[in-house]
Length: 181
Image 1: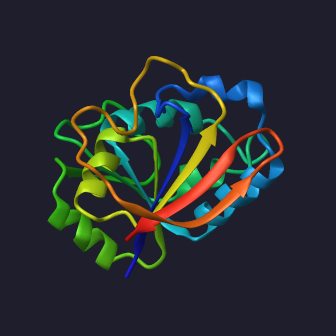
Image 2 (image 1 turned 135 degrees about the horizontal axis):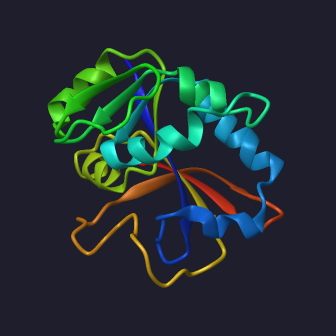
Image 3 (image 1 turned 45 degrees about the horizontal axis):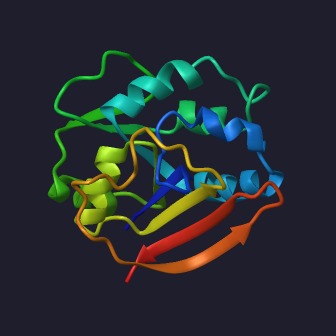
């Protein structure tokens, strides 16, 4: 049986949209180790359609020489949640249709290893609401953006989690690994 591990870069005020604001903080090598441990344990990727369409052109032409994460993103099977068919093709992928918690549970049950998610705010909110997230890895940056999509928007239900682990990096970023209570 698999588990779902979400990875998000997030500002202090909850903004996760278009994380170009993270660049000025650099990418601490220990952050790479943490994310690498998540991706190495992952055997599938689950993305919302919009994130899939954003990731495809960003990753599809990268090689391991460009970024050590390129083989993971390009070669790992991706499952795409959304009512519309993605407008792009990218590596091994399957469209699973609109969000359905029963179908996601079946995907978890049929997967050995982690199912990795990044971005995909609408999908992540739904998974959290339905208790399907096993690890929520938040990389919290020491900045308030002020505007942009937030991981928890005004429509989100209250969400209680327990802290499983944490790391503080020299660049001011804090990694918080939360799981269900």
